[in-house]
Length: 436
Image (cartoon, rainbow, N blue to C red; front, side, top):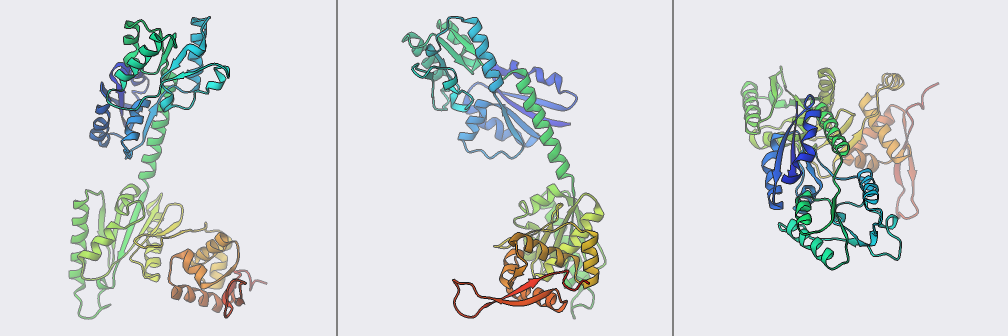
């Protein structure tokens, strides 16, 4: 069941408690209350790791925002929305039929932009909005400000968003009304959170497979090398990495390579959101021989394994130590200054037919078509391909030479007005060129 932590002011707990009964079949709520604003940050930092999401009131969100807290899990806040705001104003206008809005003050403009004062006040009337810094004495300072405005005669009605001061305002003879998020608004926020957590859990459950290869693991591939010892050493290093980082991984030794079965969630942790492969770094630092890792992400084991195989081959071809193919077909090369991020086009019968006819790999065709689409031209230089695929000029020239040999790339020369010297080599690429 989804676990949600709720951070709320002590006096406002009764506003959000009813949601527990409504959602008891779908999520488990745990409430944390605060009396001072200084308690909010510790409440969040000490408890968020135990929950799938956190929900809080608007002021708590403001406090954490001012503390520059980076939310590590889905975190949302509730507050009076526009519907609640104007519904309350209508209620106030009925309750106080002779009200003069030029003598009404609001104290919640600091964390909402839904008050469009030009819609409430005439242009020649003065609006009173209380602006106060978020400090640990916020409630006391806010109370004093309301009392001061009331006793000065500038304000006859105080509208507050903070239940903590409502009773104290009445005790000091200040006419006050409370605007808070309605039960409907609060439930809408929780519904949104539940939906986001479910989507996150579904995404994180997607399968990820890693294929680890090395010449040092293949018998007789390298002379005078104990391949069995190397396999044991790699296996031991993988197990140690898994235990040290508390990861959920299944490690399987195949004939001449290793496979890692895990989830996309774990892979995102290992690769720091696909930007740096921590496992590859550990293996490079710990092993006396180089390895290549290909990661594949898919909805099924077969899909993920196929992508892992292609990613491993791609990494070897481009002389990179790690490569990832995501669920939507992006190829990403982490651990490089210039990241290779390419969207692989969907395999179609037409593309499959061309691949077989031209004897060109499907992946290579997909990559070139992606570059053509990105640049909006089929006239490409080796620099263009190297830049968009994140490979060396040498590798780029090798690709273009292969396409030229297959008869789908024609060498042309182009001289740009701003460039001096000899014209630059470009290749005009047309995979349909030799079709009848």
